[in-house]
Length: 274
Image 1 (cartoon, rainbow, N blue to C red):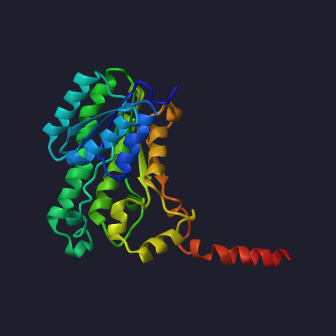
Image 2: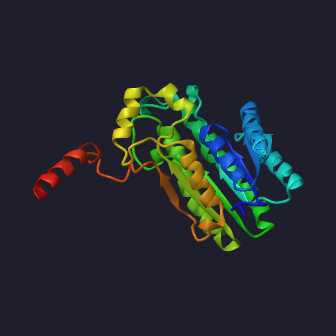
């Protein structure tokens, strides 16, 4: 028996990570509804799920519009009559948004506002209107995709990172307010995950530099996030709530100079043992 047999999963966003998570949920036996403003992309993911024998449906979704969120859940209620897992994965990472999300002294107000409108407020709308469906059955798992950028300072993306930090905080509030009612809420905080967009916005030199500072010898892939998401969606994580699960190859868990000095450390240790 698969871990999510018979369960209904709503996931927002069908890009690299969203596609991998949606497919993994279906592989685990879930019926998956993908909400995305990019219907063409979402239909492609749903078609792949169906071709593999899974069950997937697509609904156009504009996270800036609360009525659009309500319409998605009306479809879920009509089609399935329940909601078991909500994965808030969508975020505004369009090139025209991220290109101006740089130095705070140069930050256009609309870039800051847009990051919070889609990433933070949109997530709040999804939770606000999703929880009542979960309460019908007294159980549910909410998963929010955040970012390692929300946990450490960086040179770019302050609006994006701040909106993701808001999601981290919101997660703990949801876990606190609804935990006794059977609803869990957790965050997945990815590091750099290799998607097609990564190669468009990063040079090989930049990717090599990031790889050197990870504690794993490789960069993460969407399937790495999907594996974590499937765990949090399932009863395997039934005693976990209000947590930020960092999936980043260990990049934030060591002193900044360590990764580039590991070989020298072991060479030195070996010499001392001789």
